[in-house]
Image 1 (spheres, rainbow, N blue to C red):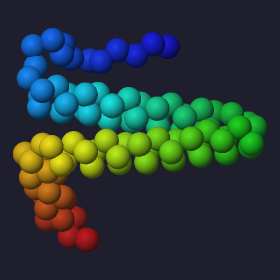
Image 2 (cartoon, rainbow, N blue to C red; image 1 turned 120 degrees about the vertical axis):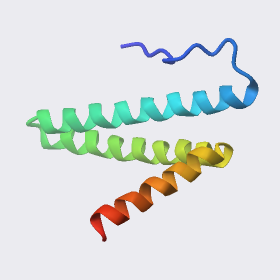
Image 3 (cartoon, rainbow, N blue to C red; image 1 turned 60 degrees about the horizontal axis):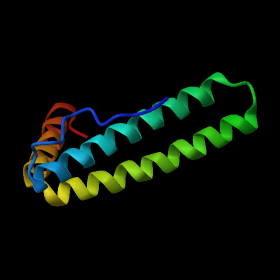
Image 4 (cartoon, rainbow, N blue to C red; image 1 turned 90 degrees about the vertical axis):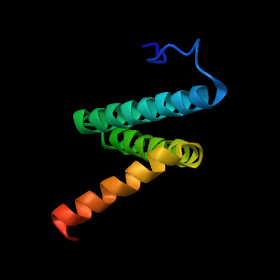
Length: 94
């Protein structure tokens, strides 16, 4: 499997480019998490499952790193993430 950035980056300014690269990295990490967790659930080999889940956990850390960087450079993303959390709080009340 070969990956490709899902957007055309040619005409973007530097700030937009960095945001799009971080979003592509986040997508790649989420895809990897899903893949490794599916593999762990599919195998009957407990050792292999354990390794897949460990690698998936590392990918979750990578996701967090990229998200943290994105939220530092995209203030609107930060604002909307906070707004989404508020909406969930209103709906679920936890």
